Length: 597
Image (cartoon, rainbow, N blue to C red; front, top):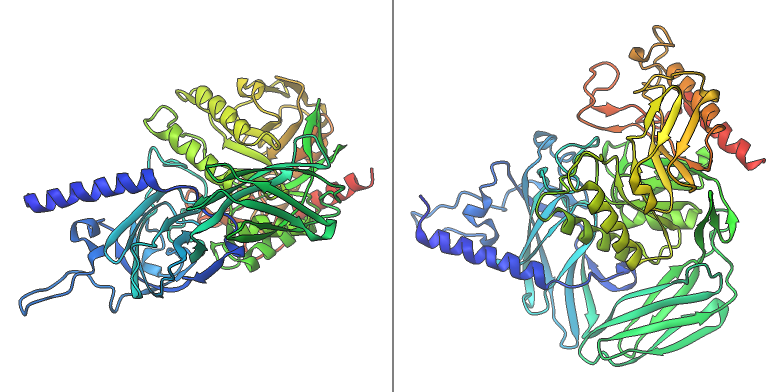
């Protein structure tokens, strides 16, 4: 039985967790434009598969004081992990670990009186508990969005010890939940920075076009700290714009101005240098301007109809079979998408790293951002809807100034039979629209009916969303019930339709056995699926875009066929080495043909 002292320490520790969870404010935006020191690189680690580290109080880094003392953990002599990066692919013994790893990074610090200091994490999967010099900074839940903790009053001049407990164990009430079809990469998977700001700094800002306007900017700038009542300027040198505004008593300044912009589009991905200056701080960003809206069955980009030619992408570099995080990772994946003929990418099924979003914007690719609300989420479980709202706010906060982001997707493949599903997603859609009414909102379903060669798309959620998005795997999970070109459709509403997933599996180089039987995973079978799907697209009313699953083969432990899968989902148009399968050329030709119409 634990000693009373241990119990009281645990209670105090929990209270600190709760306090810091509640008190932590808005995460700093645009880290790249701030004064930072990278904490990336080699971190020491302790692998804790039994989760005993809390009981041993690893964050205190105890050392023997007397001859008879011993401590049953140590960072000295421990393995090293690269940050950013997942821990599963760096140490063979923990390839399949879903549990706890403790990270430590020593860094030097010299405080300046007129500065504030923060530790900023791009993302940690899935739960992070962060300590500095033996004291708790706070916690964060969610594997795909940034968070930070201020250390101005806790760091010491000289050497400091930063310890992070990372736990990627799946949770029944987590987002995603217990079951999902991708590899659960754990660790500090994105950049870590020590950020310094003035005592009164630019915390956040929104500089984007007003809904339905091609020339009117509507936004705001938020200052934080002492003396937030200041004059603030927005400068766009290329356009000769110097706009001055004033903050209110809470540090928020409205932004309203007009200009004749060269609008961003996939063909002309124009970005402007935008400078935001307060009396005490300044931020520089590259921002594009465009409009996105729907009209009947059409999606309009800058007032003109656009057909969305996309592909799904997971945040994984298949060439290394590891979590993607870097600019080079993004360049590999997005270059493949461009070569396929895409004008948009669906970053499934969670917010990807900022390198992906920013590079897509520069390359002329629209971006579909999505929450990890996937399949059997426990919508009725206590706290789940709060987590959904928190992750939504974190996703929008990070990407709201990226004009390439044109859609917020708040879920994928959820089911009407799940308690509280409809109510939770409808409420979340309203909150999403209240935060940002300039982008489109959707929720992807796969529970449409299919009988007598007719697709009955009747989910009641679509009365609340801008786009009808559905996943259908006819020809793979479901056999065709007639000729693809004779498919009939029933739609719940007159709205644009995006087929957000379709396809089938094939092992690159598999041409053996009957090519008309799925069990042999042949390229020819997958190729025929794509031919049939393209024939069906011509029957779809309101079709505004298609997005195959998936660009490239990716790791998934549920795919257990020892010959054809071996832990990989083989639905990629490319193999895990980047080899083009036969279906690649079918879709590439289809996308090319759309450009000539």
